[in-house]
Length: 288
Ligand SMILES: [Zn+2]
Image 1 (tube, rainbow, N blue to C red):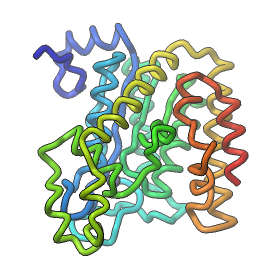
Image 2 (image 1 turned 90 degrees about the vertical axis):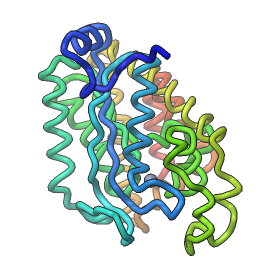
Image 3 (image 1 turned 180 degrees about the vertical axis):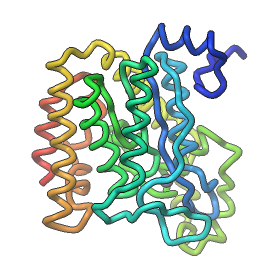
Image 4 (image 1 turned 120 degrees about the vertical axis):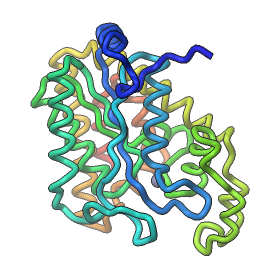
């Protein structure tokens, strides 16, 4: 099988030069090591984000940086690294690290950056999107920072933790890293047979196809955005961040998300892929 090599660390310099000059987009997958039930590998978040980026780059072009493990939040469970608190405003580690990486990507000649986080800690989501908006303005190239599930909400994946969505994605992306029958020994995730019965590689493939094709579409578009389009993109991303932060200040942390996932407000991926940034702003306004 002749599969295009897109992983930065596996490319030889001539291959890197060719891939970059053809399509100067870089993907940065983010995740962490965290308990994902007895049935899933501990690195699920980063493994998932990385493989989705690889598939997107193979489909649409671009180069995939190795995943960054470690982020904000994480369960109080074994084999879980928590670098910073889930519900803290402080962020001293992830943000500067991501900002420095973005600057380096630009210095190395990339003209668009996509940070895809497979870990959905509350503040992780805010921080990653904030870094994207801020670095878009600072570097004057488009930088998108989003959890992968935001691109598949209208396909039915609203994000979970080791539930049907994530387990199905891992079943499709890394089938050898799921042992679904072991969930029966898990007092939390195996309490009912819902996850065991509901998780399938086919569902994971459905979510994957939506996410990958949107990433490929968005990356292609990002290379063509002019200054006005970048500004509209930043306004939309900031509106989402604002909704998330204000929801958190006024109510429990996930308040704005709950509304965002309600009915009509699940079209972020579609709007982003179509460059309909005013729609995203409108959507954000309805979240709070
Ligand atoms: Zn996860």
